[in-house]
Length: 237
Ligand code: FPP
Image 1 (spheres, protein in one colour):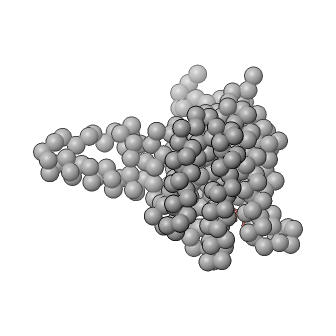
Image 2 (image 1 turned 90 degrees about the horizontal axis):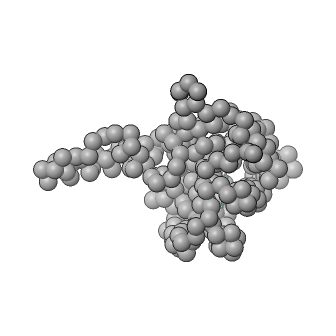
């Protein structure tokens, strides 16, 4: 019996290279990448994976050419509008995490609307990490903790102690279990400022497959590899 991870996170990489190999524009690869997100979500639902998070756009990605950034944002907008049926049919809850203050108001509005309409769904939660970076997350958590500590001081209250557990409640992923498995496609073997705090004990799985080609069979292979890992969390078994 293969052990099913509770939270799988994916760094979806290689869309541009995939498109180039077909002699197409980069956005064509991103569009095909959305099909992979849907296939992986359906597989996660089938397997009973509670959380599937996907790194759709990093803070660093804002520095890509304007044409690519606006193309990706338009794709995100369209996907949010199109995928509601899939989410409802599969009892999927949809969430977006990241520095959403940088998003255009109309995109943020459709995201928040879909989050609300799927909030009562009890199956898999799909988390799209958008305008996200690990250092941003830790920094915003530290800022908010400091604000709360200062407010406590002003009101002559004892600030909450800065424990790991308490600090984690300030992260953008508060309430979501840390990923058990992180998958990165396209042969790159690095974390790229992703969930730096949350991946402390995550198992990493790297594959040369480019994201648009990563579908159910590839996901199944990653889960198979995960099931053979011996997770000791620094202890001796
Ligand atoms: C990395 O490939 C991929 C991205 C930066 C974007 C990923 C976004 C999607 C697949 C769209 C997701 C949409 C939803 C609705 C979740 P790359 O462009 O870095 O490829 P390269 O390394 O080959 O250049």
